[in-house]
Length: 354
Length: 191
Image (tube, rainbow over all chains, first blue to last red; front, side, top):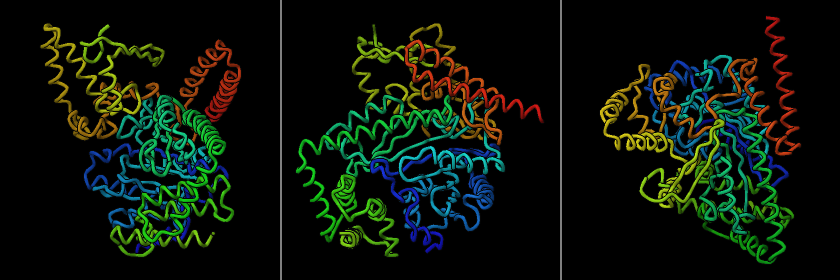
């Protein structure tokens, strides 16, 4: 196994831990798209020009105060096997597009896994900063510094009118996408989620389910992000997004109170059964585990479990994924065997904190 | 009134949008509106960029075809467009269409300016960047001035709508930007 990957596995994921006091927002993320001005964008790259991008960016990342030397790790995607790539994806350090890239591609990661630079994804650089909870401001401060550090050495493609030039005009200008991941079981269970999503989209923001759309979303996890990247400052884009997130959190709180008032026992039963399923199964599929864990997380937020910590629940959301399960057992396993391992993981973890 | 897309059925859905100070109205029949919504393309969001760019192109072409006198000119324009190739990276409109509206290199923004502008107009709030700029000094005086102008408009509209809390926020932001501007000028003076 790649030594740096092994080190990642020994630490909790930077974007989830420590969990914030507010149980509704799981994590925040900002990414900036940047390209080198003198080379074609990845989509029009040759193997040679893409390799040059990797070489130049890797040199800068190696000297960066965020990802350089012992402060971080640098991965050439081509040197990783399939499971190692899956692990980076599940930890939200790499995107699907990056790990499937046919060009030379790479990833620089800081030790705390909060900062990462994807090289040759849709753009030459996708700089990203993650943070647990609802903390776009913190992400922005950090990513501005990281971006300046890289921009002092690399020459980014820039136009006085259009701002930073990106492969897709949907990212041009600031090149910024800010997003917050939210757990919204209250809005899903009170059947308000589809109307809510519709409303948010009308405001010019994007909403996507992490495990499906709207009420069909088994994990009840949603990501809300900005769409517009040109014509507004980064701060004003973030402020508009934050205002919507604050409102969503308030709606979710209200929905939770309504659920408790209306039929307390139905809700307790739902959470209790889900807990029982996770604690006593011998085979669990990914979808089953996500659905039940989402209900248990809801229960933890409501204060129904004395000993089960929200950090443990968040960690399980990560550990239940195929990449993590297989990497921990150091073996590629068929799905049926993964289900056995997954059930064992939940029995052990939940009994530890029963 | 007839639907803007099919130009056959009666338009019953009317959308008014204010973009860059201009009011744009779109009139659709229920069938076309539904189709737009299903393909995720109603309004500027949840769209497929290629569809937005090229359908708009196609629509105006259809319009032109309806007028026989412009047929020849249109054909020439079409031929000229399809032979357009970026001198820097060899990108062309066919590749742009296939990739969902993506570009090959920074130079493509100039080569395909007409298409880029169409995309930007559909997708973005305005066509001028006002955010972070390269270099440590942050944003240029020009960009700050532009944001101040924009905020002053916002301030005026907030005041006339009697939203004083929002107006106060705009005022504070304007003052902060003016301070930033003064600092920038002082720095340039030193240089």
